[in-house]
Each structure stands twice: as structure tokens, then as C-alpha cells.
Image (cartoon, rainbow, N blue to C red; front, top):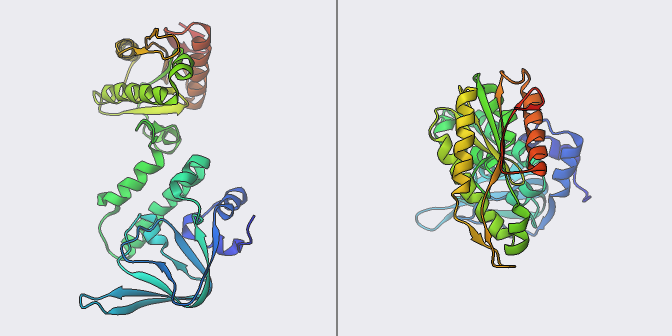
Length: 328
């Protein structure tokens, strides 16, 4: 691990309430930067992809006037943080920063990383950073008597990035614990789906074919959710996806499950590269009702998920109702 002052990292608003393991990851994905006098840290028009902690030296912020004259508008000395607010909202700098003397800085994400690349490594930690960014921005905006946070497009984008699966546009499973569980209205339907024989498609035509199929399945889920006032299309793990719908009883959930199965069956078949045969899409579906089938949401979720996998392995291309650990 690189030699970075842990106490300086702990003081950053973006890393508030991180445990030691999370802080170790942050430090391991940071860089140390030596910036000679008069060298630029960032330029006007650059996107704020990182923020900086000045450990030694002096950084001045310069803004160019309409007449082309550079004017110093801020000055930073040892121990100060530079650009965390701009980084949090993905801003474009309207000024440049240069070293007034030889300076040393901690950089996060490190010079060989981006927040998007870290998202693939540690999604929970990056989501926590993004949520802290929203909290930080809320406090600073209120302090400055600025616009309300939820009306700002860049804040909405941060919230979306924290919870949206990049490959399909579905919500990530993390949204359940952080948002959906607190919004459940019984009866709520949990419908889980897993495509059948997907390995055959991927082994023959490559991962891109699997990705394309998942995008098409995601569209079916999104279109289904648009028919309800409160519904969330989700990606759970790998190619396991589904829907949570508020105020949805067992009869309606069964109807929706059958509709999803029909929609997937009607997806355009794919010709397999290996043997030129036709790959037709089917799916295994397991659904449950909260509270009707299980009083505890977590038990319901885990049981329905296990039921989905067991049924998929045993047969596939079937719809089952999970209730009290039994298939009905």
C-alpha cells in the first residue's frame, strides 16, 4: 500500500463513516503527485474526475477574465482539500489550478483509475462515496441558500449512477435495501426471472450475444413496470432479473409472470454460430407475495431466489409460486 496519511483521508467528507477495510481500499486506489512550481494541476474546461489533498506546498486558483488576464481567486496551503465539491458533482472547471511552489498532493481516484473503473471493483464502496457526495452537496447548497438538490440534473445523475446497472439500465439489487424496502406497500409482488440455457448462447456466439439478449429482456421488464404506479425493474446477479410491484396481489402477480414468460418466448430467435441451429428464448420464473407468503422480506427474497435457482436447474421454462418454502 502506498504511504498516504490515513488521518487526512478520514477527514474527507466523501469518506465519512468508512470502516478500516473501506479506507484501506480508498488509500490503495489513490496516488501521490509531485507538482513542480508553475505546473498546472487542472485547466479551465477540464472535467473534475478527481479531487486532491494538498500535503505540502501551495496551490493557487486562477480565473481568466474576459480581457484574457489571469486573476488569483483562491489559494490553498498544507492540509486543505481541493475540488471535492466539483468532483462530487462531475463539474467542468471554470478556472485553472497551478503550483505556486513545489507541491505534493494525494489524488483520488488515483492517476491510473476512474470512478467508473472503481465501480466495477467495489460497487458498495463507490455507491457509499456517491451517497456521501449527495449528503455533502445538500449541506453546502443549503448553507449557500442555493437551489433545492432534487431539482438539479447533476444530483439526479449521481443518484442514477449509484443504483443503475450500466449494462441493462435496470436498477441494481442495492436499491432494495437502500430505497425499496422502506417503500413497500402490501401486498407487494416479487417476481424473479432467469433465462434458460444461456450458457449455450454465450459459448456459441460470445458474451456480446448474451449482453444483447439481457438488454432485450430488460426492456420487457421496464415496459411491464410502466403499467404500474410503483414498480421497480431490477438486476439481481448475473442474468437473474425481476420486478418488485407494490399493491399487487397473488392473482395479478401470476398474470404478470405469465405475461413475462410469453414476452420472452416471443423474442426473436438467434442463430448459433457453432452448429447453425436456432436458439429460442425461454425463462424460469419464481414469484412471491409479501406479506402473504412470508412475513419477513429478507426471508421471502432469499427463499424466492433459492427457489428460482433450484427450479431452473431442475427443469427450466416454468413458472412457480414460492410460498412457505414450497412450490405451488
